[in-house]
Amino acid sequence: MASERGRSPSGATAATRPRLDQPLPRRARLLPEWDPEAFGRLSEQIARFLGTGRFIVWMTVVIAVWLVWNVAAPRPLRFDPYPFIFLTLMLSLQASYAAPLILLAQNRQADRDRVNLEQDRRQNERSIADTEYLTREIAALRAGLGEVTTRDWIRSELQDLVRDLEERHRPEGPVFPADRGRGRDIDDR
Image 1 (cartoon, rainbow, N blue to C red):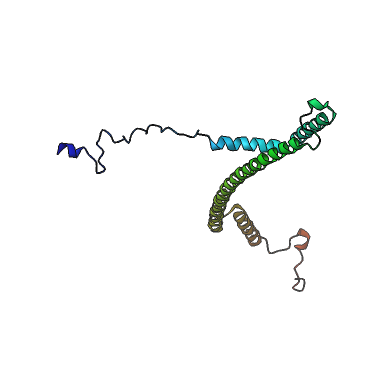
Image 2 (cartoon, one colour; image 1 turned 45 degrees about the vertical axis):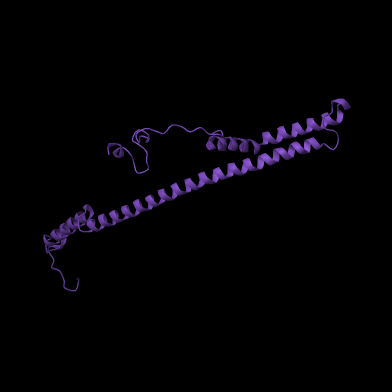
């Protein structure tokens, strides 16, 4: 009975079961491990170089030297005579490697663009939400300010009161002293 307690339903004992708090030992692999990101970065560097004027100039120089050597050099030193089959093979080999590397670099760039676009979209959504919140807050402040007295409103009310007081305390008689001796006509009004 004691031996059955230490066994799991799969038949492994506590001593043979792996511990959950420790990593498993590494398994031996037949194929070498490689970092796909490192290969992707290398392909991007190659694609960047293939897309430069420097590459075109170097490729032109190599082809020109190849052609001049195989046309002008003595016959025993020529390694690729006139139909230049070996040159064609080398250019085909270079093109067969360049195209997939360029496509890999473009795919990686498209993935980065997609991630950046998603981040920009999220940022725009946050900005729109913030703008809507601030708009609501400003509208609430405006509504609240409609009920609050402002300096301009108080100033205009005080000016109206001053005018009313001046009109009430204005003498009924003529404004100019020379007109005091004479009475006012009703028709002059």
